[in-house]
Image (cartoon, rainbow, N blue to C red; front, top):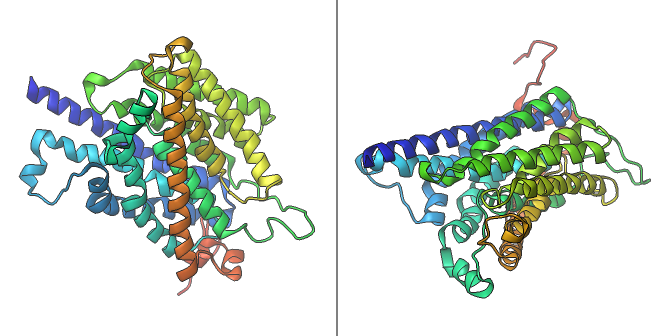
Length: 400
């Protein structure tokens, strides 16, 4: 029976890893559909290569930083318990690789390729796993201190803060250091609209992400005996809440309609295992409102050129999810309890603060030493031709 249990657990978490791996194609198509046509190839290539660099960085460094597990052992050792530790690494890698995938959407259309890959290696190998270890592996005794201070540990079941808020606030740092796209905001105060190149591809990306999210959340149980249908239904309700509120507040804009469910799913990750479905619906709806209002504010009034709105979507909705877990997870609001609003505020603030420090240091150093941005000519030509030497739909033969 133990052997069956081990094999079932390995299969369970492997299926989760595959579902979250598929989400990275969602990141790619969401960005592809949002950017202008001259940057579509770059969107596709970035996500794939970022994931590859993330795999190397997390396998050799990041996973050990977070969990103290090294893979410098023989294959016989690694294959123990049906290779559960390996597929657990695979599963958590897909979370770690979401950090550069999130950042990619904010800095689209004007970032250099090489410096971003260096940033990916540092973020996934060092910055992200340090906070991951604090939240999910009792690193540095911080969870024990939070529990002693508030009566409960910081609870983030599937990464509202650990993954999404951290990625979104790092993305904000990168966006601010990079600056707005050329002619996006003119000196006379006028703004040039850069509408999405393909609503169908944008919608496809959002659908892939939404479907994969049920692996992201449900499989965060990591073993088959801890699987909970509550997590699945809470994810569904938050997705629906985010969609409906974003459609209403966004006045039927398809960009808001397809980012609304993602906002809800980001927010519900932390408390999806402790909330009542009605609470998850409210959490998702508030997240949808946060995204619409803050995306509009950052783009139009604050003139922050965050192309895919990664700071409102992941940074702010992720932080809201961390806090909401301490509200809607309470028994008084139909939740399972075992959470504390104080603990959630402390943990969320720590995640945001660490992301700001890490983002400013990593991208600040790269800007000072290598430069982050394409030249004006390269940006005008588009990242596809400037970096990859081919467009998404070449209308002529390429000559060498």
